[in-house]
Image 1 (cartoon, rainbow, N blue to C red):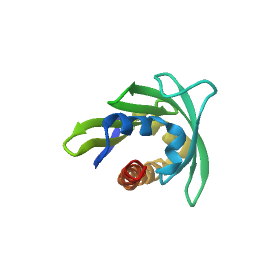
Image 2: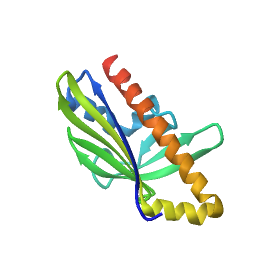
Image 3: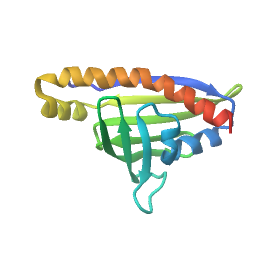
Image 4: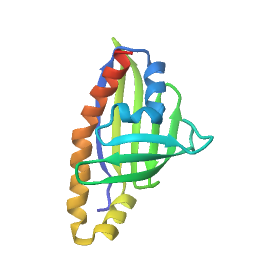
Length: 155
């Protein structure tokens, strides 16, 4: 594949944009809402700023693995995002003030470099593996957004 695969969804959260941003930018809390990522931790001395690195531990019924990610967007109160690999997949939370609170959008972009990595790693099964990751993101994004909403609104 030569094009990015992208997905996104949004949810309205009854909270201030600053609170929503601070919540999603704290990657150490990801295990509270992600259906796959059980925990994340910053490299020593790092935090939610562009260039910072963190590790995530992911678990599915079939496997467990860790990823290394670098923050690529940290626009306080507006957007927070990271690149897995880096350069393979981008995840971004966009925060926008809206009537009734904050509109939180989660987006996922499976980049051409990530698809090339899958082609090399999985060979003839690459398309199947990419389809599985795409399906997981399509299912996981709305579940994650609902869980973030619950965490913030019930705080």
